[in-house]
Each structure stands twice: as structure tokens, then as C-alpha cells.
Image (cartoon, rainbow, N blue to C red; front, top):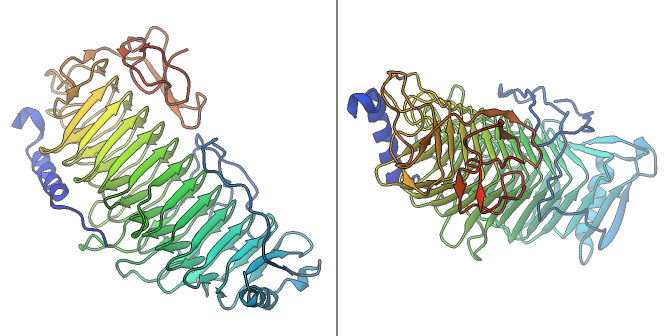
Length: 532
């Protein structure tokens, strides 16, 4: 069980007071689902987050191929091998699948289930499949299993190893958690090249969730090359991970949402993915790479991803896109498209763009008790009505290195909000055309941060005509001539530098590569993009 710490709450309260003070100058589903298509981290789809249980799910989505380490290939069959079907669609029935699971449950070492249904086929269940022994289920890209909107699809016994691959799981429904897969304690889970559409946990109680997957206390949970679209639950619209050491690679989370809200902080968190720690018995780290979070919705924290971690772990996020996630209609207003708290975070080569909150922190929220190294990241066009549109840091040490901040909009601290107890350093960062409706507020950073050198900022005056607050003491005020956010190579969208940009060769002590993986020299460009 996580608790939002008092330092974070104090920073949010302070932020509200600062906004009220008028800125720094004044204060000084269908079962026949087709999943054949393609998307990538530079895509921009128009998903729907209206919260309908049988949503008009966008099936025109497939996983991405980023080149990240940890992507899994389909696992070879093992143990007792059972085939469902004899080559005809009529032979692939729910009862035949139940019988196959019973056979592998009875086998000494479990087994594998494949299908021979004569081509693409959907099996609609009238009761869940209960797995008691190690099991691999391989749909070979041909099979969809549906809960019909009335039943969960898979429930796992404790201490069970489970692999599901090359299959679609849709319209699973659970009273509380895990509409498609409930893996409650111990064992392992691997989901490989699988698609999860329109699965739901029905209860809005606190501390439960995972519309598609609930992974609890597992030694390992790996989500590789998967797609999650249109799933919902109280917390973790697509996945709730509680005490499982989690790796997510090349996976798309789109149009998932949370269904609950309230004052406890234990509801409405993690529109796409909810994390409450890694394995509680053995230290482990969270790895997220090459994944897309797009158009997800939450009511409390983490419209895309909510992560609360415990001592002994670290969070690594690389080459990810967080785009158009939101808290629309949230009673609390919401905070953090990417919400992180409790341990160290390393966020690299990623883009947070077009996210919005009804209160604070549409982009990255760093809770107190944490630390963060943010390198080669782009924060663009994130919008909040109050504080910290791109980065909100309540009370933690955070270093930002070669990041680009463009077009973010807030009443106070459009690019970066820093709480009184937070420490922040910017090195080689670029701040351009961030905006505020408050003529007295700073356009980028409400406070001057630690200066690692090589920073560039524009414009140099506030809407009031007064000089803008420098994000770092030695910052250079100049227009960087940024190009629009676009696919410029690499895994995530970036903003190229126009010809003659003063950001070119403005920095030293550079990372080895830019956000796209292109090499940098000993002298390099400010921001996340290195000009050729």
C-alpha cells in the first residue's frame, strides 16, 4: 500500500498558494476483433476515453519495435502439449479449451496449449479458465479468447508460471481485478506479442484494479511486444502491478482509463499502468523501454503511469512516448502524466507531449523521497491550469541534462515547478516559447535552478514586459529556431534545430548520444537533439 508523502502534499499546497498570489512578479467491444495493423512511437492516433465499458475500441494498433534490450521472442512449447480443435472452426469451442486446461493442470509439469481452428477464430467463454500448473498458451496469431463481457478469461493459482503469446484477449470482465488475467501471488508471468482489448474490472473500490492484468507478488512479470487498448479498472486501467518485479518492452497503452475517484489517494491512479512496488521479498528494478502511452485517462495520479516504489529498487524508463494522456473531468484535477515516487528514477531518450491535467503536472511528477536523472528528453505542449505543466518536483533532487522544453503552458512554472525543499540542476537544456496566461508569471521556470552550463532560453520577457526569470544563472537568452515536433529518426519524436540556431555547439560535457541515439562530440548542441 502506498502513501502520498507529506512533502509532496506540502509542495502542492504551496503551489496553490503561489498561483493564488498571481505569479512571481506580484509576489515576487466486438468479439470478432481485427488486430492486424501497425503503429510506432511517432504515431498520433485519435483514441476515445469516454469510459464506456463496451467502448468503440481502436483496433488499428500494433506493438512497436524499438531495438530495446529485453524484447522476448515467442517461447517454445513445453510439457504436455494439447491442441484445441481439429482444423475446423466448430471444433474450437469453449468446452474444448476448458478440457485442454484441465489436461495441462493434471500433467506433472504442466504443459502448452495451441489451436487448430482452420484460420482466425474467436472462442467466447462462459466461465473463466482456472490454471493450476505451469502453462503456455500460444494463439499463433490466429486466435482470440473472449470473456463475452461476463467472465474473466484466466485466473492463476499461486506459484504458477504462465506464458500467453501471439493471442488476443478481449472483453474479459472481473468483479474487482484482472479482467483478462488474474495472477494473484508468486510464480511468473510472460505476455509476449499479445493484444488486450476491452477488458474491465467492475468495482470502484480502493487498492484493486488492472482492467486487463493483475500481477501480484510475482518473481517476474514481463510484458513484451503487447498492445493494451480500451481497458479499465479502479486503478491501473490496463495493468495493476503489486509487488512484482516488472519489465515492459515495446508495448502500447492506448485509451485505457481508471473508473474510481475519491480523497483517499488509493483510487483512480494509473490510467495505463499502476505500480505498487517491485517484488517485496527480493530487490528488483522496474524497466520500461520502447513503449507508448497515448490517450489514457486517470482521476487521481498518473494519467499514463503511476509508480510508487520501495527501498531497494530503481525505475529505468528509456525511449518511451507519453502523449495526449489526460485527467479530463477529474474531481481532484489530477497530477502527473508520468507519476513517480519513492526511489530513484532514470528517464532517458523519451518524449512527453500534449498531455494535460485539470490542476498540476501534466508531464512528469516527481514525489518527495525520490530522485531523478532526466537525460535527452523532450517536453512539448503539455498544459495545466495551475502549476508545473512539464515537470513538477515537490521536494526531491532532480538533474535535467540536455532536455528540450517547448510550448508548455501553466499559470505558474510552465516548464518546471520546483518546491521549496527540492534541488534541481539544468545542464545543456533548451527552453523555448513556453507560455502562461498570467502576465506576471515566469514563462519557463518560476525559480532559478542550479546551473550546469550550456542552457538556452527564449523569449527573454514576460507578457507583462518585465524580464523573464532565468532558468539558470548563466543561461543564454536566444531563439533556438526549433522545428516542430516530428519523426527525425530514432524511437521517439524530437524537435530539430533550424539552420543557424544559437543552440548549436552551445554546450560541453555532453552525453555520448542525443535522444535519437545520434553521436555527440565534446562540444554539442543544447537540448535533446543534435544537429547533423
